[in-house]
Picture 1 (cartoon, helix red, strand yellow):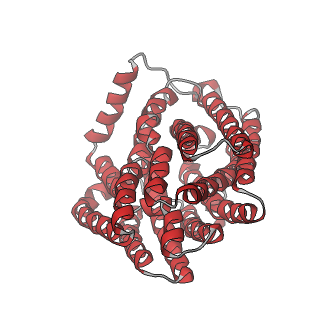
Picture 2 (cartoon, rainbow, N blue to C red; picture 1 turned 180 degrees about the horizontal axis):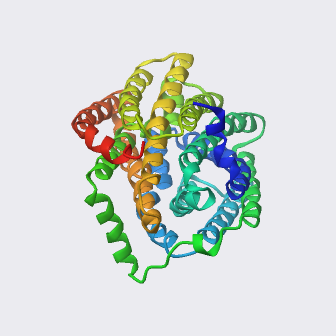
Picture 3 (spheres, rainbow, N blue to C red; picture 1 turned 45 degrees about the vertical axis):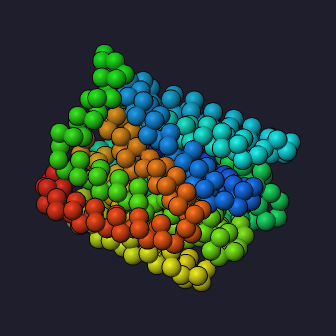
Length: 409
């Protein structure tokens, strides 16, 4: 391991400009997440509504994401990213304005969250498909990992800043900061120059055929299907806890937005450590085993968080959860990026986003409903046990994944 490996991606001008603008917008994104989560709990004091608003945030990843995955393989990815992030800016400023005018209730918040979630779902496959166009192939592992680092540094800083803003001002101003932060990445895109031959290819097949080709590409390769399945299990049964933190803070710990910011920042801090560790590796050897070990650690952290009542111990467990879940997700994304055809990249990565970030939508609806009726502890313990059973079954494909993903080392 060396810091030269970590910083290798910055030899690429386009990537350096992208990261410089994007990390500020990511801080704003996480500030808005905290503000919306707290507004939901403050308006309703309902575990169901916390789950429902979380559902509105992530379900578009399943519905919208794959469509934009096809378009990311057909059109100029840079221009798509620029337009989508401009719309994100408008959404944040509009939500701030509605809050300041006093025109927001839980229904309006749900709709505005669904709009924001749809824009995020559209952007994710475009963003992921763009990374290989911004760096040389030998720097792809470092770039993929460091992109995860910046996302999770923002996941640490954003909630901490949002907690201060909400306590001293209001959630609306945290959302306005998000809107302003998008200006930096929108401007940055104007300075990023991707040569014409690096732009996405434009296949003649229709949209539906493009989606089917993406599914077939993943299903045909057993190792890809196994990795998709493993990360989907974690997303469905474990990740929902991070979307339900506002409910845990209010119903279990009986605290306010500062504790929500503490828990969310702890998740982000753990994720930062995982991202830096992966960036320093700069290779794929041993990463399948790394994913499997961290999948077990994520479940142990989940079980611990659900049963403790001390907020500092809970924060430590959220640190462990953030580390292990991010280690799995970032490592898996790196392996997928490093092993697929560029002509299929947008479609495969849109399915990756749908598989790894979309399933919490279903989990949130079920766990939110069960939490309202039975409390939060037992539904999450049950989901963790289901996840454990599935991981044991999928781990039998360890050698198949190693042969496919680690073959170049």
